[in-house]
Image 1 (cartoon, rainbow, N blue to C red):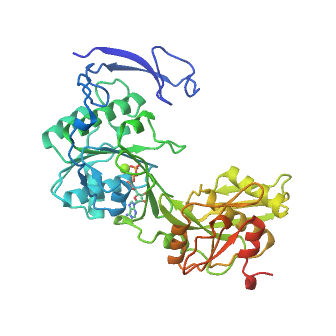
Image 2: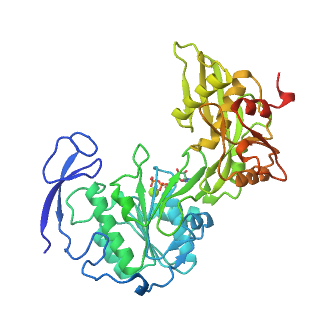
Image 3: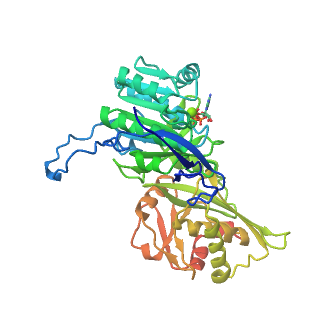
Length: 458
Ligand SMILES: Nc1ncnc2c1ncn2[C@@H]1O[C@H](COP(=O)(O)OP(=O)(O)OP(=O)(O)O)[C@@H](O)[C@H]1O
Ligand SMILES: [Mg+2]
């Protein structure tokens, strides 16, 4: 019988202590320590399921077969995973409530079942009936998908042993509990222990385990940070719940790169891959030239994406003017405003400035600076940026335009979407495109002059 020990764990960050602490030394939260009783693991097995009494071997003497990848049936999802699910790996999919985590994993279950794989879908949050309704809506039909409404990890483990599926879905890690830990489901210790056991199952039985995780209010994956270290792949599911598009982004991948992003549209039949995402983000755009709008190209992973930046500048009724940034880093906006005032001579000290990235996208790339600055400048001067022009460039503090990476791909994408002209950094002047007229600029003030359409301006 395993020995039982007790410890105090901060429910905020997972910091462990032998006794109660009023304030957590790690995350400084007060009153967050809860006592947890835990049975000890046999000492020759590590939390990762690695047997500790094996001997070191020479790397050249280690023989492994090629990793086996299985397609999920959703090509965008396969691409983010680095070419499909690696057999025996454990993948964490984290996202906001209602974003579509269960939907994508049920669709994936359907895809795998179509390839003749056996799937065990453990539903710890919804009844079998609810899952069946969703499966009917998504058109997922198969006699090799088993739905198991269960929250007890020991029961889940015994069902995995009995059914020996190829893939197990845990929906969600926060809702399951292990009897060996005497704290409630969703606590830091429970999440860590359950993930440990699932990982041992994945590695020892060569079963692919897909785990759904919730995110906290501030957007972090709920549970200890160690959860992200334990799993092989972390996929974040993002997007605006009130809009139909969703983004899958790889945050960590032991079997592929982490720069890939997949774009989907949520409909009544589930998530569909978006073949031309630019259409999705630009189709609401007014075709007329309006002061205060500029199109930038942002790199979402390795994929360039065209997005519209909108700015509104107007006299403020308040003693200190307001600055509002949606989808753009606030500090970055203040820096751009300071450069516009000092280097271009635009007086914004009595003006409110609002900047919004259309489509609910977060733009964090420096190459978006120039587009943001031009949207603000054109709105302030009531002139327009030519609607056929894309703006690419990073702004330095003295108003100079710095070169950007990946420009060739950005121009290709802009050309495919029908743009005819691009304002680019002077240092990138050697990069040209047969269908796009590139205008290299050295300074922000030159860019303002170069992109304003003569016919649209007063
Ligand atoms: N009939 C429908 N037509 C279109 N979209 C729907 C329909 N039903 C549900 N949805 C979409 O599916 C989303 C819910 O998907 P799902 O249950 O997979 O999310 P989840 O991330 O698993 O949520 P939770 O965190 O609650 O488990 C809804 O927010 C909605 O966008
Ligand atoms: Mg769900």
